[in-house]
Length: 342
Image (cartoon, rainbow, N blue to C red):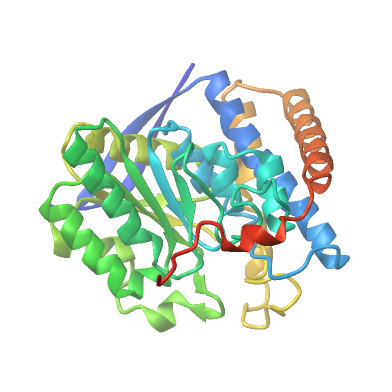
């Protein structure tokens, strides 16, 4: 076991530096790594198949952002709720949704997690208490509502809302933080600041230097986090999740990261990125950083990483085989689980 002391920029009514200590075991480090590598392996294979026009529709991937869902979801169980964004594949993997169910959903197959109706932006699972939405900022009030239900029912569960920096300019963000603070709801707001809302830089759309500052307006504590360091994400999330479970109310984690993938595969030419920016962030790849940290802390070896990568490739390959053997939904399925005006 290794102890790591991390320093976070803390925003509260008394602004200060927050120092939190993490206890990192070999098992914990390898669990982080498995989640991140499995999510990336799946996305890489989806990208390959999408570019060969095997898949239809749109595809939003999140290469480079895997540390955030991996670090947060390590602390959650099936009884905890997660709302995610249109870029939700890594979140679904980290929350434990079945790989073949995710893949089948993207291919519109009957065995998909939403029976082929949701597509990649609307993955959902009632058993895993997971929901994603393609509406920017749409999942934030849903997580607040889940937290209100947990508190009303006396459940020892926590809700987590993942969203991007663009969503922080939506009214749903401010309304949800205000309500959550008033009722001291067990919810953690996880802002994935990947620098861009599609092609618009945060500095061009947001008046404040950091969205964490906005938590102050709702008497809510916030931490600014290195979102490419899974140990830092886990440590900050542990602080936030534990205080939520103790009934101390909501908090905001502002995780600084970078989307190495295009906003939208094939369509996005990424001309809005300054020269050299992407290359700089590639050096901060969260998967590579965890490898370096784990070796430095003497928690894992290069052989461990290669074995996990091989296992991930095998799991993804087998999941594709199962998913693509699933039939398309029956025609009558189109009328199932819809609202009728009658």
